[in-house]
Length: 161
Image (cartoon, rainbow, N blue to C red; front, side, top):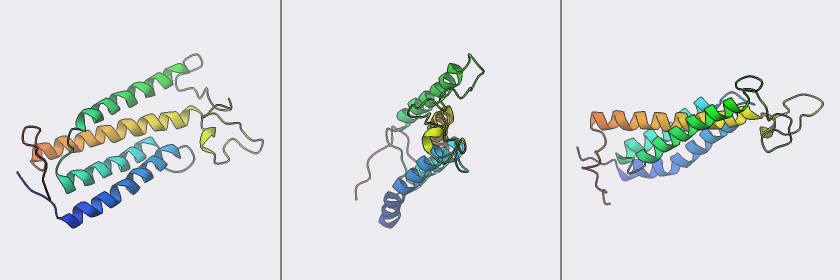
């Protein structure tokens, strides 16, 4: 099926994709401080993919990158969980270590609102966000491919303005 959205829809998509992705990244990185986290942020990032699929009818050659991102996110999540296995799985071994994700804990509470006080929780949210955004984007791509909304690799041609 060969179709194309209007220039208005594509322009609004171009404008809105970046703020949607930035908001998704914000949700992922602040998941241990505010409502949100890896899954919610990943779903928001995948909604940007859905917007691109609807507006342009294709993901281009990015589906291989999505598969790779999904695998990296899942593998890194498992490895971070296993690094703390000396204590227990998912042990928060970075908190309070003064590293980039284990900032010093103040005397008045364990979480004053700084991103780096989360320890491994921040890293876990980041890996879950990568995995969920890639997985949901792949699901959206497969569903749109099966329904005929986007063209397959053999049929994909750039639509010229």
